[in-house]
Length: 490
Ligand code: NAD
View 1 (tube, rainbow, N blue to C red):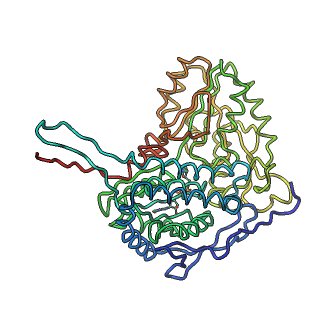
View 2 (view 1 turned 30 degrees about the vertical axis):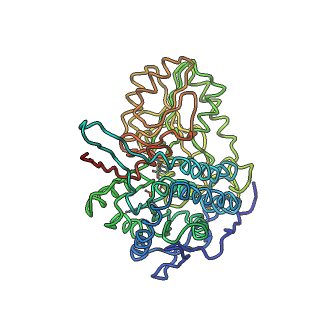
View 3 (view 1 turned 60 degrees about the vertical axis):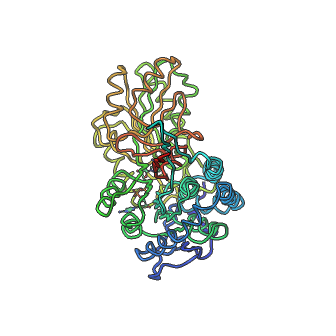
């Protein structure tokens, strides 16, 4: 690791928003800065979109929507594939921008453009599945359903995988014949401006609009806009709940939410530890500093293997290389932003105060290079008890809580008693125990002898306060349509 502080430049000149096919400044002329999490220096600025910009974007999206929806399926699919191909062509520039702006490490972030590419191709191929039914309601007549787009869809994006979420998640609403207004996170906005350039080149004006700005102004205006009936949000539980409340003040809206998690990984005594130990590390997503909704941040180890597993795990985590996010050698970079950094530190202090056993990490790494920036070592607390704050609340950071268990009923009660229910992981060679346990975890996405990965066409989403709705599968595409019944009297 370098003795000097890190030095970065974003490969994008004059980042702007996209409204009605044009790359523009905010009508207010305001811009806001994005900070390099590795050194706390200003990386550059982007337009600070206002409520008026959102209104202009919705108007453009509304004007473009009928012609977009009228395109034959193969035509819309061709646009999706063109977008995907253009992302691939610019993948190196996007990757460097994304890594610098987020602090996520380059080796694992290479997958993000590929995921966006694959999802765009996947939904391009699903266009003919937007179909209705025939219903034998009365024998003498014909009863059918057709699916129609909502019109303008609003999408709000979090900071952890900005490009992947902004690009991949366009595919379903667009294929379903909607147009989009997207609001990226103010914490890592640059890659969305590259996406804006790509969309400006490829799509008819107004089909995709990207308004960078603050949640409290641009995000709020999008949620409140009376002509945006379908909203899709990825972010934290409190913001998701606020969005549901705000939307309901204005109109009856269809809001889907992909929210936080505090996901259990339960390891039985017969598990294959050669695989389970590295999986417990992979499941924490240290490559993006644990800032992943699906991170398995509560590790339940059976008492018979507790000490052996824990010692090996802690030994490996303590050796992880923290440093330059652009270096292929780095296992972990800095936390994305100051607020998030302070939140992580707060939970580390809470873990200590509540009696968790700090096994490794918990502090800023030593060395000149880490004096500035949002750096924290990967952290493990053992001997966690279910009532501790660190054991119950989402940190969204590189902090793993380890619990000892003996009774599976009790363990599942603890695993399920939180407000979250996003993912879960079960490790055992006993197939019956594995399936029984998977069925009993109250979460939307479960791995048996696996962790972390999302699989194509497999619906992802949360139970309880982790969200509502499913993405990444056929359900997602259909969720951007309204169903209309037509009764034909013959
Ligand atoms: P956040 O809720 O703070 O912000 C997300 C987005 O909402 C940002 O674009 C922000 O500007 C916007 N926003 C904030 N206030 C708003 C308001 N009043 N009206 C409209 N928009 C508003 O979340 P974050 O810190 O960016 O991301 C971290 C959270 O996201 C974690 O809880 C994580 O678990 C969750 N997440 C969930 C998934 C999933 O698929 N379930 C994926 C990634 C992240």
